[in-house]
View 1 (cartoon, rainbow, N blue to C red):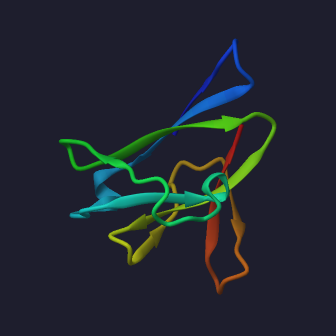
View 2: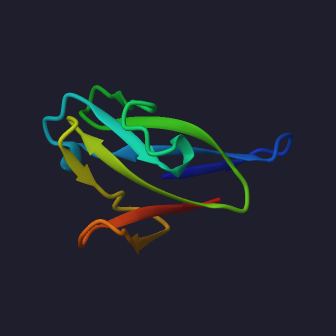
Length: 100
C-alpha cells in the first residue's frame, strides 16, 4: 500500500496492491470497504501483467477505513500490508485498516 498526501487537496491518494502470491490465478479482484459502502462491485481492481491487482483511491484525511479484497466474487482476503487489523462482527474474520 502506497500513500501520497496532496498539498492542494485534503485527500490522500492510496494505491492498493494485491500481490500475485495472494491473488493466485484470480480473474477479478474488487476492493470493498467503508469508502465504497461495502459495495462488492463498486471498485474493481486492474490486473497487471505480473498477475497482481491494483487500484488508486482518493481518501479523506484523518480517517481509518476498514476494507478487504474480494477475489473472484467468492474469497475474502486481507491486505498483508495494512496499517492494522480489527475484528468484524461476522464470525472470526478481521478487516484490514488503512489510516490516512
